[in-house]
Structure formats: structure tokens, C-alpha cells
Length: 123
Image (cartoon, rainbow, N blue to C red):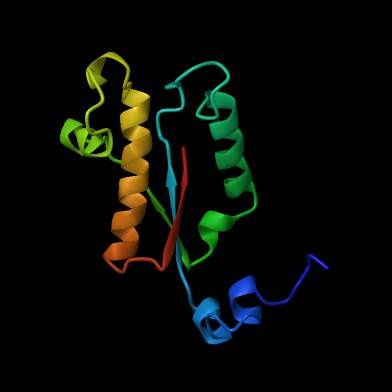
């Protein structure tokens, strides 16, 4: 049941199979694995290292249609645009938060610039 040959989008006529065959993916990883928001937050070292190791072990970065990107550090004005009216952002937004937001920005930029068709951000 779960092991379909075609993706959901192809099976349901959303995109033709030829679009999937040649599509590209951008992967964005959080490079500073020692940054964490808290010991139990998903953005912690063990989870990030495990995800990255699995991708390398499976050889995904050797696939020609997969490109790796690094996140940027989101500027304060970008953070403030999202958190309009939030008091004193500098007291609770950490560098890890800013890199996490920057990963999403890097992923979106890669898609919007046409470098890849879609992107995944592991933060």
C-alpha cells in the first residue's frame, strides 16, 4: 500500500511523471551542531548529527539532482517582520533561532532563484 511507484502528486495528476524524474532538491543543514535552544528541543546536537549522518551514509549528497546549501544568520529586521509587536526579541531569540530562520530563508531563496525545484531544511 505504501510502496507506490509514483509519488502522490503524479498519481493524482497534479504533475506529470516527467516533472518528477528531473526535479531537483536543495538540502539545508544547520552547520553549528553545538548550538541548541534547549536539551529537549528538536534542534539539538544528537538529532542534527544523526540526520546529517544518515543522509551522507545513504549517499544522498552524491545524487546529481540534490544540492546542499548552508543557512544564513537571519538579520534582526527579518526576525522582527515575523514577530511583529513581540517585546524585546533580543532577550529570547538566540543565535540558534536566527540560524534556523536563516535555513528556511536559504531554502526559499534556492527555490525562488530556480536553482532547485524544492528544498528541505534540517534545523
